Image 1: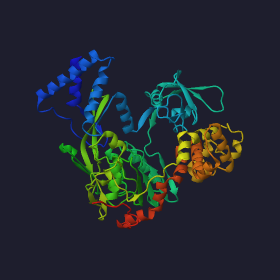
Image 2: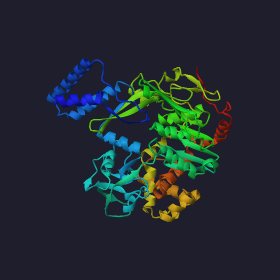
Image 3: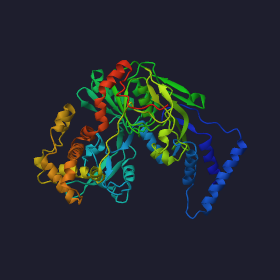
Image 4: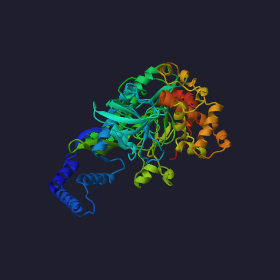
Length: 561
């Protein structure tokens, strides 16, 4: 047993083989320490500790758990972003990076809003076009109650998803409850390859202005975005909004590919600096500018890593107007090493990256990990000195704490009543009730018809879907009756004060169910304060693209030297 542990530890620490990188950085495998005798002593102490634990701990602890926990603890002492992946986590990482998985092609959500909720899940949108679930007849609103005959009442949502996924060509049997049908339905579905879409939404938010949501940067992101840019007219657009909010990052080569669409050939996009020679690199835009239209980039405090590379490069080259909130501030590069039997991995920080103006946007992480991830605006952080750099035209920009927007605007927070309705999943459940025909007078609400003809029409004409359903006074009255049936306390004044929000959320969920999440998302962003601001400042984005300058009114951020 001791020999087994020693071999595994040596593999982990000394002889890892490079598989790839979160940001695509290529670095060589580590070499053995100079003081071999000291290393051997540490390994002996480590295996002795494991031996004592396995022999004497009150519980029977598996070897894998002990070794994996030790590696995770070791990496946590280095920096916040070096991490270890057990077999399940490593498989999920590979799926995310390769933009595909094997499963049914559905998105599910727990029926209750609690994060620790267990039990039944509901399909929240029409299954992916061409997917096994769509071919077998599964629908949005179906509630899954059993998988392969086994009740899922005690399963978490992640456990349900894990059972639905599996090798290509294998089958899974799901039992569902469908509104309006008394008896449960059973479907036997063969798993197949399902692409993971990283640019899920792309449409005209106003005539001539395209909106593009990028969820993360995986192997297909640049190609997805290019195709959708071209589909919406490419250089015929009068402007575009690139939404990187809540985008945690991903592959460096994809961030470079996206930035390359907008900057000039041979513009510097990003540089990396590490201890090893092959981790110090500079990346230049490889091709001629493809899309010479004004760009507004939306960011928030959850935009990180590769998202910050794109935002920082466009800002430094005066090519995009950055709107929203200061980004997360992750300027560390991780390279992924495979270990063991190629089923576990380690992401190790091997370099720092810098924007074209030589900004390091990494936030300070000398405090606790909790503060680093959850309290970027903790007292004292606002007074920390930040480096000042200059864009191509001489505008001052800040480093050392994320990308600071040119136009600062926060997303409107929900008030008490809005938060209550949202936390109880009221809008989703009400729309599901409408779409299922459970409302006796639903026909007078002019609900969208879930037919192939209507779905096709929404793809040809944006107005086709929106003309099918509006939240009338009759719908509002029925919605209030539904709230009472759910024992949700409210007053008529609560509804009156929040009527625009309520109408938009009902319509969004109805469209989600009838047409898919993109049609619902079109409705949702009509009340998005940051998207509305992006539309307002599009003329300034055009000015920036043409002259490299911004009026003082637009540059709302104060530079503290």
